Image (cartoon, rainbow over all chains, first blue to last red; front, top):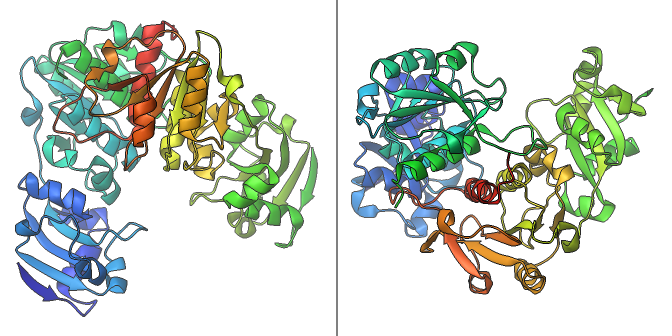
Length: 266
Length: 266
């Protein structure tokens, strides 16, 4: 491991990292920010190409706790105050790195009758998207479409909340949910839209075979065209005392039910 | 509705509201902060005692959108800049109010064989606690213990994320999780602890009768004594590719499974 201190805030590496706080720079460069040893280790474990790794002086002095040091070729060290400008979190995470974005196609997500996809229609909260990515991987999903109008999949909060799952699950971006549904149906995938008002309960629906679960926006729910395009509309049975649960939680429950029905989660 | 503008930041009402951003003041006064028309309307609907209601000049000018005006006896109006100091959110919520905290006992949560409780053992993330409160109400839980070491149930972020569910579900605070478990067992409640390593799957566990689900801290999981005190330890079956799901999501899935087993969510 080659050690290289950086003392100027105008250093190109630091400028690049600060730039990656913005979606436009992430999309232009095809790079994104990884914060904290835990997520970085997961990225190493999945052989994601990692560029610059920068640690704070404190993190260095503490002996790089929990960092998979054998995977780091070159390490930059900066003063704590300068490090703070590199991160998007309140609490100091000690290490940040730059990773290469990965792009998946719809075909990467299809596994014949094993196909279990999530289609997110304009989901904007990064915490919800992170939850959905983790739950998708946990319950055997084969991929996800993060439809246009959704938060950037490489938003730093999505990266943190999805943890390593982001590096394992094929995720398709830049496609309209409606277009994804049309293509999935053409491939023989049955499309089920989650909608609170649907009469059909998720626990009495057929969740086997090639299916995609469509989830709507936090405030507005599914867009009408997506709602109508789905093969079936399903709901999670719940007490009328509660208006709704958040879309991350709803998606996780549906995926759990899918896993039970598909006998996958042994 | 009596209208009363406030022009001084030193006004007693505004000082009280700003004080309620702190847990110590909330506990001392037995009051808490309600932000936004949606949650405030839910508080009105549940007849929660509401003290001061303060709106921003903009919200007033827009005609108090979505606010249940017939429930407001007295309304304070302040300049937008001053209003911003009253809230804990980044996005302007237009209206804040002061509500009286409600305290429930363990007995309030017990409904004979219908009892379905959640015991949170030192859960610190307010979003997770909010999620658990909503999921508990959605899936027919009769109450919750928010054990010592957990976030304050009246933390503004818990209030926002739990939405109206906070005003409907009996929630016991200030009790150690271990003590709650001992008392619940003495009352004939079967105690099931959720633990990722448990061999017994939640979907093949008996979830009927009087039960309590114990959920552990985000980082550390269940404390060993709580783990040992439980009658059973259960887990959610999931792929080994994912280390864990967050405790709010896990709790919601277990509660959903309970509701299915208990035939309550028709």
